[in-house]
Length: 313
Image (cartoon, rainbow, N blue to C red; front, side):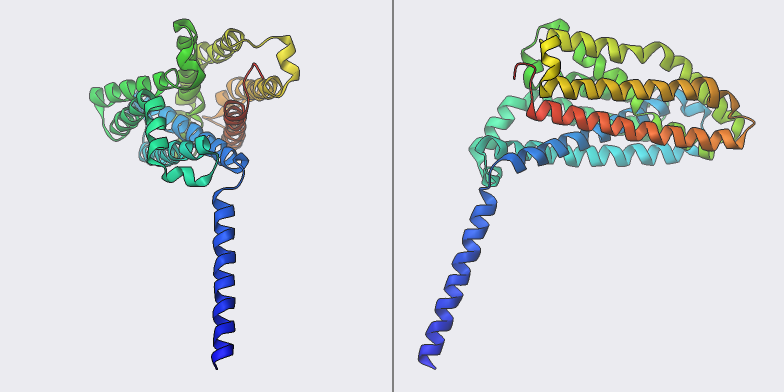
């Protein structure tokens, strides 16, 4: 039994050593996987927070006109806010691993401190904005509208307080805030519009969609104006468009163009028929769902753009 026992012990030790080496390799693998996960988390919290912000504003503007869809929009917005908060926390936690170039960097207190120092203002603005937005979603009346406005302002301004935009001139940071603000209020309203169309009567749905369309007609072009002006101020030129940053930027612009085509279809063809035509209501919901997928794609491109590339390289 002695030799067999010793051989078994050696084999167990070898297996333990192999598992330990595999674990160490997994924890210290090249940072590209970390970057990919970081981009995925960034895209997730971008999509989620835009939905939460858009839902909160939809409730603030149209809440008094809503019936059966009001509570559903509230729960949708709170769910999006919760997903965004979790993804945002995980994103910042992963930043220390990105700095270390290894998964073990997540446990490095010094690196986490550096991440906090570099992003403190943005983190505090986003945490406060999320809390205020949640209060606006569950509340009613003037206080809810005020909380929604304050939360939206904090979340919007946070984008001008972090990354390369924090070092830009004031006018460039104002463009960042405007770009995010309009995108959140417009793009984040896709789900509420669908819920209104499904759960409200035709007349109510038609009236709300018509009012929303009037507002969107004036504010949505600001997304393109602010985005193009910001790209120019960041140094995007004709030669940039043949590099990865420029190609992704063109993909983002193309996605926005498709969104505008669908928005035009909703405004001129489907929206006016919602009150009397059940077929138009189903088509409108489908169109809004496709818009939501396109918006998610545009935000995925944005997350990839800001994680891996810059206009200079």
